[in-house]
Structures are given as structure tokens and as C-alpha cells.
Image 1 (cartoon, one colour):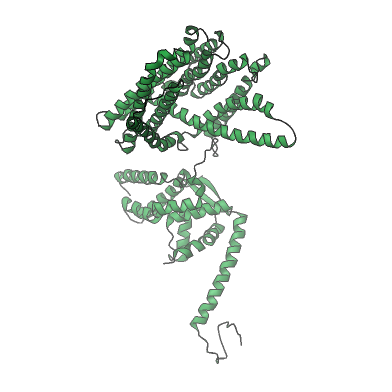
Image 2 (spheres, rainbow over the protein chains, first blue to last red; image 1 turned 60 degrees about the horizontal axis):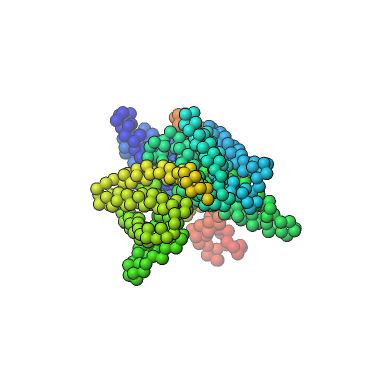
Length: 459
Length: 127
């Protein structure tokens, strides 16, 4: 009989062996269970034959064959397993399966609801394909057709309590009011600013619902950042698929002399576009850990390139001594540059293990951020000199505000990052700063939506 | 020691034949292989499972999880009608290989001079 101490250590050893095996992609957990049963029986037989437990374990493991050879054999038999598949509804029966199916049904209903919702105004004579005021109506309210439903999904999924629910509903009601009560000049600056900024402000509301009760924690907000990046990528992929479908449809119907463009413009595109937001969110939710996150991979790929471009730009600027020729839209271009750099920073932060020591990639990241800051500073300098000449239009004020917000974020991030590189701070500080900063974008977007139109006279 | 290629080639008929005797599971199948071969067929234990999974994928065997008398969940395999047909086919092929080899071994052991009238070996030219 093995002593109790031996039994514990056998369990520990089997645990360790199991965890080694689990790391092999080609070996699924059912296979691990099958092999474990084998291992235990072998150990039992050897112990009965008079071996000590740990000896028996070693012999049994040896007989099992090397893990590499074993997982190679499994990979040969199950080559599909090396390609991780997104299984939304798991094939094994039981409670998870039922839950996944309910989830799928709810998502389907919400996507259909979004598609129906965007066609509701048409019942009241507000047509999407008209070129006048109605286009403005759709532009301002676009986010209100889909984000409440997406929020609803997360409210259902996370079982939010009613007090949070009340705040979320109020936010959407307020958004609906501000988007529609102001007497916007058709096609004016303030109207397009509202159309652009309302989704940004409301995305925070989605985030609060997404995080459930965890919005107060860094992790909860970081998960929302990860979710947003993956959602964007999935949405682009779905849109590409939609484009292929549409092209195909147009082609075959053209062959029989039917023009599908009206159908496409007033039904397929709007309904598909809003429905896809819900579906993409659900897919991202379902995949989470199953498939490698794409956003950090793209970030890693492009960070060095962006850094190289920016450094070259600054070098050329210094070398040739050229002044920056600031056109009217330069500010927006530099805003976009900062957004891209912030995105690159954010998604590499989101995927980085905070405990690992600084590496070469971190240095590239800092070079990227600092060179973006310098480029932006040069641009701001040039703009400041001519701002009175250009005049303060709503667009320019909004762009300037965004530039300042991004500049502050990146400057402080650069500082935190450099401190981390020099071993004076932890990486968590950077994560904290980024996640704490998130509401600032939403607040600024809300200010643009609420304050700008009256201040600038609805032009 | 029997070489790797032979082990791999013979694994399908051996596993199917053992399962044709009765439903079984990994450890017991290996034990039976050792018994029947008198210890001459040494399989690396883990390698049996990919073989079983391949047979399962091909539909020659079917698997079910069941709680064994030890209290652990265990995966049992059962041969299917398709598996029996495959076993018959494998058997036919192996018997052909076996018969060929036997013939050659016998010819090697008792090299028959051409003048000798009586021969135990089935010589191609006959008598």
C-alpha cells in the first residue's frame, strides 16, 4: 500500500503531466482524460507488482512515449485541430450547449430588431435614399438604431441590476433628445459633428454594459478595449463578405435584366450594416479565448513600420528645414495620426503581459509614441500661428480639442513607458492610465454633441 | 524488437481483431497485444490512441465513455460492421503476405537441388 504522502505526490505528478499535455494543441481535453485513465491504470498495476508509487509513475510515463512524439502522432491524426475553429454552439450536450443556443437565438432576434428598427422611420416618410434633410436625420441617429440593442444584449448577458439599467436608458434617451431637438442647418458643420461624435459618446455606454459590474476595475475596462478592437476587425471582415455577396447578387440579377441597386441601397446595406454590429459583437464574445486576438497581432506587425515612417518624417523635416505647410484639413490629418498611434499603443498594451520585463518591442513603441508627439507638436505650432487667419469654425475647434486630448494621453503614456523601461515604474501604471482615460473621450464627444450646436448657432 | 513500420502497418488488423473478440479500452488492448505476441510486440502506449482515433474517424470502431469499476470515466471502443468488413479485408491481405513469406522461407530452408525428385517446397516450376 502506498503511504498517504506518496498518494498526494502521485496526484501532483499526474496533475503536472496533465498540464504539460494540455498545452499541446493537437491533444484535446477528452484525449488527455483518456490517456490519464491509461496512465493511472498502468501505475496501479505497477504498484501492485511491488513498485513504489513514484517509480511506477516514471515507468508509466516512459511507456506512454515522449510528449513530443505523442502530440505529433495526435497532430497527424487530427490535423484540423491545429487550426482552431470557432465553435459557437459546442457539440457536446449539456447546459453550456443550451445556454449557447439561447444566446444565439437572442442575438439573432436583436440583429433582426436592429434591421427592422432602421426601417421604421421610413414608415413615417423619412426616406433613407433622399438627399435632403432626411439624410441628416439618419446620420445623426445612426448609432441610436443599433447601440441600444447591443447594450440590451450585454444587459441580458451580464444580468445588470436595475439601477445601472436606469442610467443606461437615460443616456440613450438624452442622446436621442440632443440628436433631434436642435434646429440644425441641413448639411451644416454642427450636424456632421453630432453624427460623428454621438457614437463615440455612446460607445462608453455600451462599454459600461459590456463590463457589467466591472467598469470600475482596470481589467473590466481593458476587456472592453480588447472587445472593441476585435469587434472592429470582425465587422470589417463581415463587411467584406457582404460586399462579395452584393457584387455577386448584382451580377447574376443583371444577367436577367433586373437592377438590384434600389433594393441594395434601401434594404440590404442599412439592415445588414446595423445587424452585423450585433452579430459581430456576439462572435467576438463567443470566440474570446478560442482564437488568437487579431488586433494585437496587427499592432505588432505595424508598430515598427509606423515608427519608421514617423522617424523618417521627422528626420527629413530637420534635414531639409522645410516648414510644415498647414492646409485647412491638416489638423484632422494629425488627429487621425494620433488616433492610429494611440490604437497601436493601446492594443499592444492590451496584449502584453504586465509582468514581463521591458524588451525591444517596448523601445520601438516608445520611439513611435515620442515621434508621433514631436510630429504633432510641429503641426500644432504651425496651426497655432495661423489659427486666427483660419478662424474658429466648429470643425476646427473640435479637431483642436481632440488633438489636445490625444496629446495629453500620449505624452503621459510616453512618460510612463519610459519610466517602465528604466525600471522605475510598473507596466500596470500604463494600463491604468489608458483605461482611466477612456471616459475623457466620451465626455469630450458629449460636449461636442451637446454644447457645440447652440454655441456655434447650428451652422 | 519489431521495427516501427511493421508495427504501424500491423496496428490496424491487430486492434480490430482484439476489438472483434470483445469491446475494450486502451490499456486492456495493449495488454492483450502483449499476451498474444508473447511480449514480442512492444508498442509505445501512447501511440495506440491516435490509431484508435483514426479507426473511429473511419467508422471502423465506435467509442463511448463509461464509468469503469475503478470509478474513473473510461473510453470504451466497439467494432462496427464496417470495422468487421475491414478486418476481413485486412486478414485476406495479411494472409496473402503471410503465405508468400512462408513459401519463401520454406524454399530458403530446404534448398532443393534440381535433380532431387521429391520436394517439400512448392517450387514454381513444379515437377
